[in-house]
Length: 165
Image: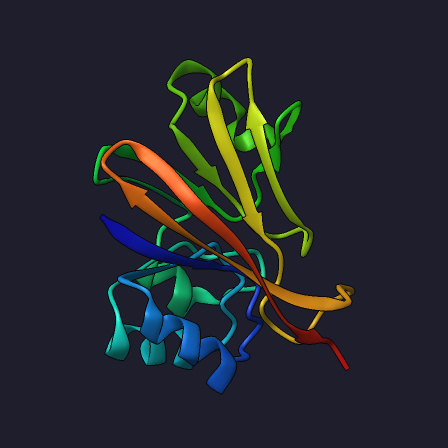
């Protein structure tokens, strides 16, 4: 059983509230637009981190993290990318891989819109945690927390950090 904290679009921002939830997780997954690598360096000092780079990330982030990260967590096939779309509107760059070999859990960021949807056609769960950073058009900073237990994805929680100012 693994407790996962999923965040995205930090845009160089990390604070004590985010770190409180990092400390409660077994692993942290970041779906891109990290900004300053101090964000991921801070997380890695506390917990194992899986991440991808996003469209705002520089060459240092692109050297450290992949564009797409596909892995097994317990019995769940996971695919993380930054710009991925959502069921019915997947991004063209990832659409073929998802269609030909769908993961059980597909994660992306980029939109700053928290969204969790089940794709009945491909039999996969899509998650976008919204944006944990302060840059962007979102009104509320958000993250997701859930448990992977064997092949089950359960105990999903939306974390609203604060109204963005």
